[in-house]
Amino acid sequence: MSNWEKRFGLAGRTALVTGATKGIGLEACKVLADAGADIAAVGRDAAGLKEVARAVEAAGRRCVTIGADMADVEGPVEAARQALAAFGTIDILVNNAGIALIDPLLDAKVQDWDQTMAVNLRAPFLLARTVVPGMIKQKRGKIINISSQAGVVGLEAHGAYAASKGGLNMLTKVMTVEWAKHNIQINSVCPTVILTPMGEQVWGDPTKGDPMKAKIPAARFGKPIEVADMILFLASSASDLVNGQDLLIDGGYTAV
Image (cartoon, rainbow, N blue to C red; front, side, top):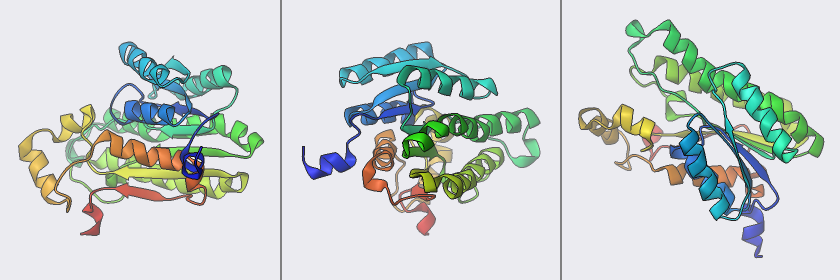
């Protein structure tokens, strides 16, 4: 094995990925498995979980599928406990599950706000709190929180979503302050619009999507594999000095 494969490889590692049945989560499971990790895939779609398992097992890795709802208080905790029961320890936590309920602030529903905070912000906290004791014990770990460019800059009609992702970025920094001393690296990945099913739902209409593209110097939206490759870097030992960062994958949107 060459030196770069050792730095970026994940042989012997286990990864828990939420929102694993589609988009960025599905691609992350494939990429992490290809790099050598066994996967605990968490989602609500039973058929999607079977697809993840097939892809991971095709790469020669073990996949444990876990059905859980991140909007429930017990969902994240139970998912983490099942993953720990299956693998003994979790080396890599990818908090990817998220929802985007889009409305102008004056029209936003309180229940949509609460659900957004539960899935996008509370669930990552609960998952991390459940798996981190094992990371502390083994003196290593990686937590990758999938945030958004909307957690860094304001976007119209994204009040609840932006607030949840901005909160996730700050949660990342507090996790770093508390856990970096245990050789745990925690970072946020902040993509621009990615052409996942959720991205297509929000931005697929050209009347809405084209003006957004016009604000991106690269003049395009992203692909799930581009985020998954960043996740791989942050999950590997190559990123051991990267900690507490909001890493933008935005085609230059925030450079303007």
